[in-house]
Length: 386
Ligand SMILES: Cc1cc2nc3c(=O)[nH]c(=O)nc-3n(C[C@H](O)[C@H](O)[C@H](O)COP(=O)(O)OP(=O)(O)OC[C@H]3O[C@@H](n4cnc5c(N)ncnc54)[C@H](O)[C@@H]3O)c2cc1C
Image 1 (cartoon, rainbow, N blue to C red):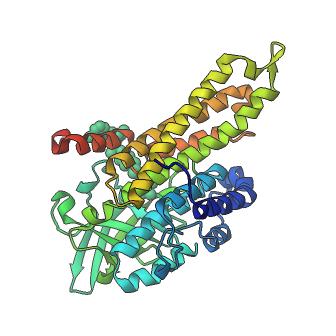
Image 2 (cartoon, protein in one colour; image 1 turned 90 degrees about the vertical axis):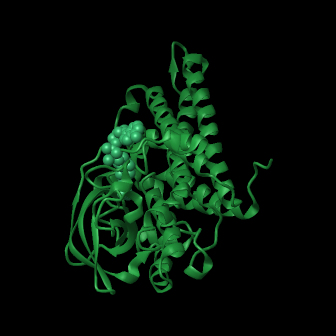
Image 3 (cartoon, helix red, strand yellow; image 1 turned 45 degrees about the vertical axis):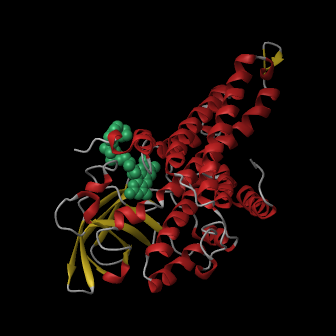
C-alpha cells in the first residue's frame, strides 16, 4: 500500500498552493460582498492548469489524474471554498463534455473551460425536488431533426448567473418514465427565452445559486450529450468523481480553520496557562485531526480507485456524506475554540462554516449518499421507488 504522491503530483500541488495562498486567499471574505468570482482570476487559474487540468491534452487539458485534481481542489478550497466551485464544475462538466458531446461541440467548449474562459453549470435540480432527480419534468421536444425546444425550470444551480452554458437534463420522452426518458443537453445561457433569478443564501454568495427559466428555448440537436433517453444514466456516472472532489473541497476549508486554531491555543492564555494545556481544548482538536484524516483518506481512495479503473461508487458516496459532515463539525469546533472572536465576521471560521453547510446538501444529501452505499451492498432491495 502506497500513501505517497508522485513528483508530478507534488509539483502541481505546490503550484496550486502558491497561487491559492498568494492570489485567492486574500479575497475570500471580500468575495462574499461582491457576490462574484473575478473572471480574470479564473483565467489565471486556467493558465496554470488549475481549472480543469484533468481534461485530455487534445482538449487543451493537462491530462492530470484524479488524485492531482483532488490535490488542487484541497489547495484552492483552503484559500476559498467558493473559488473551488469553478474547478469542481469544470472538472465534472468538462469530463461530461469530452466524453459525451459530439466532437465539434466538445472542441468548441472544452478548451475554453480548461482555460477558465467559459463556465459550464449543472442544471439537474427542479422545484419539485432534487433527490428524486430521475423524475424531472423540464421538457425537450424535438422539432424536425435539427433542434429541440426546452420548456420548464431548473433551480438551485450553482454559478448560474456567472456561467456561459449549462448541462441541462430534460425529459425527451414526453411522459414521466423516470431515468429512461431523460436526455442531457449543453445549453448556452445567453439565448432567447432564458431568464434567471438569484437566491439569497446562508453562504457561498460568491458562487450564487439561482433558478433558470426556459421558455421555448431552441437548442441544436447536436448539443445533446450522449444518446437520446440515456442522458441520465450515461452522464450521472461522472458524479462519482465530483463527490470525492467535493469531499476534499470541504476538507480544504476545514484544514485552513485547523491550521489557524492550533497556533491560537498556544498563544491565548486563560487561568495562567496557554489554552493548549487544557485537554478540554486540545482533545477536541485532536479528534478533529483524526476525523479530518479519516475523511480525507476515503476521498483520495475514491480518486485513486477511479484512476486505477476500479469501481468507486460506494467510496464516492461515503466521501460525499462524511467529508462535508466532518468539515462542518471541525470548523464549528475551531470557531468555538476562538471564543467570542470566533463568532465575529473579522475571522473566517463563520464564513467557512456557512459555506461548507451548503455542500452537505449540494450534489446530494447525506441520506441519498447512504442510500447509494446501501444499494451498492444489497442492490435494489435497499431502494424504495414511489
Ligand atoms: C450549495 C448548493 C449547491 C447546489 N448546486 C446545484 C447545482 O449546481 N445544480 C443542481 O442541479 N443542483 C444543485 N443543488 C441542489 C441539490 O443537488 C439539491 O438541493 C439536493 O439534491 C436535494 O434536493 P432538494 O433540495 O430538492 O431536497 P429534497 O429532495 O426535497 O429532499 C428534502 C430532504 O428529504 C431527504 N430525502 C429525500 N428523499 C429521501 C429518501 N429517499 N430517504 C431519506 N431521505 C430523503 C433529503 O435528504 C433532504 O434532507 C445545490 C444545492 C446546494 C445547497
